[in-house]
Image (cartoon, rainbow, N blue to C red):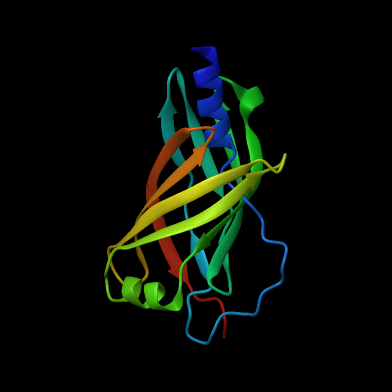
Length: 154
């Protein structure tokens, strides 16, 4: 029982991966940042709060660092990086109000890999709901939240 709980917490905590390459800047008119407020999910006897930094667009990927805080098992908390792939075509679909599915990858600070999948459901051209599923060690943690697309280029 404890190993299942620990695996679940580790899965939740290891939500990200960093890409080492320095990709080209996004095309003009592309939303090059995404803000996702902290999200929370329940675990067996506690909860996990996932707090991502601003997602920055690099090629077809949005990359961010994250912090996952586990309560009451603070010693399972961790940090890491995540990369979510959203093509130009999918980004245009979001702009038209269409729901899209995405995938990505991640790694925690110990470089333990994680799978990332999810769905974006726009409310308007720049904001909506996001569902992120993080898989590791045979378990999946699901976070539901909101997002806001921003274009910081001038």
